[in-house]
Length: 302
Image (cartoon, rainbow, N blue to C red; front, top):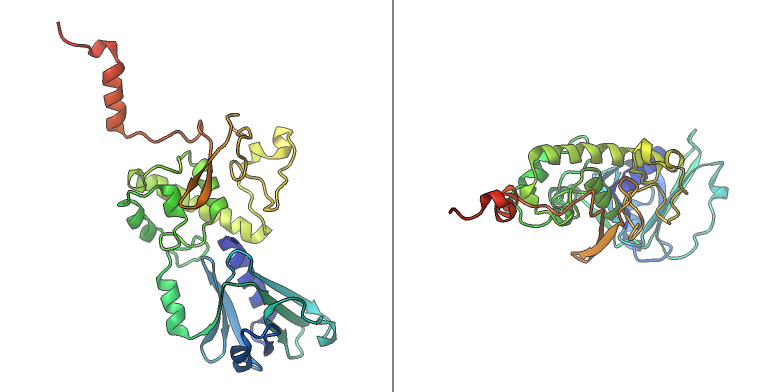
């Protein structure tokens, strides 16, 4: 499933190609036909994303709400010479938008396929969707303390909490695995055992990593000293692209310590970690108790 940086870049691309312009809206597949007819000839105001949700705004305070799900695609093409360069729709295109004006930006078109959500909604429904999401590291109005208030009182694992879009919006399996590795936190550690400083450092890291994902279009999480060039190793070969520490690297050596990366199921999704760099969390009380039972100096009194 696309992570939040993909939706943010998609919103930026749609805004760049369509904002302020009138469009022809159709549904070649037919499933969005009635709503496309309502949009046809109207002007696009802009586009925004929140977590894994996309909102394409039209005049009159109406929005196309999109959630791509696992297989959805929203392909945006800009800078064409004219309408004659727009190809015939191919496949099950739920929504097609084509600019219908003379603009220095040239002709643009966009095709939506396979989304699990494609609805025409008003501002109340959009606000309700936003209200149900946790803070998004890519939004300037995000409040990380909202997520922290839920994390600090939860017995659920931090690996589970990071994937809960009601706690934190936009983080998917890749960013979850990588930010936990970068901060040496085991994915099964209970949320309530984290310190606020650890959470704030993770949040700042997500802001930076996901922002770079928007700019580059890929997920790169390794530090300069662990790149293929710095380590003399082969680049990662994976359909997700990017250089990572643990995601989808099961049994491969950790770039930092050499231990074999591990994986397990967590709430229906694979989670990845390094057993040495991310040791199992043990509370201070548990550590003290274990020390008392193993320290010979703490034996029985004579």
